[in-house]
Length: 323
Image 1: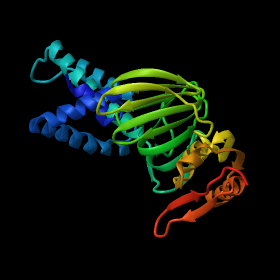
Image 2: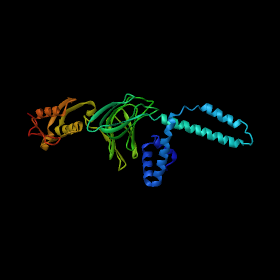
Image 3: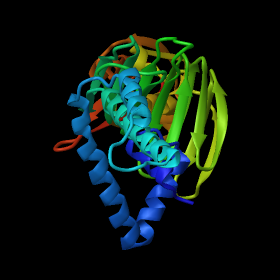
Image 4: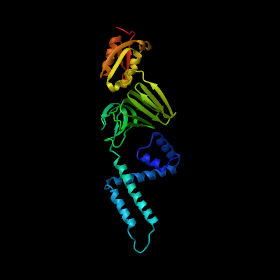
């Protein structure tokens, strides 16, 4: 059931993912619900003017209320019940004023970062570091209150969270919520799914389809349409290579190497012959460009590099696996 309290929490940005989904469904169910929500939203936005008001002196206000209750009224008698009703109303108004002032003052300045076909590194006010790889993320200029919270609208982000036991870190991604204290992990969120992969530490992944705790080497994917949460394991050595800049291959099949390179560089490298996928290679690279990595592989395995005209495709050609 959608109550006014839940709607106010929604407008204040304090709802849980499952509550957000409930409110969205409720709004879409009828025009009357949507109209009611818009009216409440307008009232909420208009209350932002209270943030410029002077601080409320609660003690002084209550003292005035008490004087009005005990003061004699000329010309007519006023019952104690009426006086207390008036007092309660005044206190309620004072409380609402404090509520809205605290709400507006607790809304920090937000920054929205949109990265397309690139990688951006940013550092948050608490020292946490984010590597945004073709995605959109929203975060506050300063963290206020007992929680640190950012929103991943879409894309891939690697998080290196500064430890703070008193203030957990939360990432809202679609209808899911990821909660941590201090750790390193990756969040990928798109229209169809949200995925979390943990490099270090512990992460709680909350979704409408269930909740799971993930530790180093674990991953989970939530399928939005199916409302299904799947647990997985991280097997690739280079899963987080784009965050560290280190690519390591130890007796790996060339087919797997090409797959890692395409993920790391967002490239379109392929092999001319399927048999080349079974060639074995051992090598490591540190912050190298794709052309240099391919040159080493081609030289090691006696292969040729072909750049397809008017395209981003690159083909490795050859017959053998050694010079």
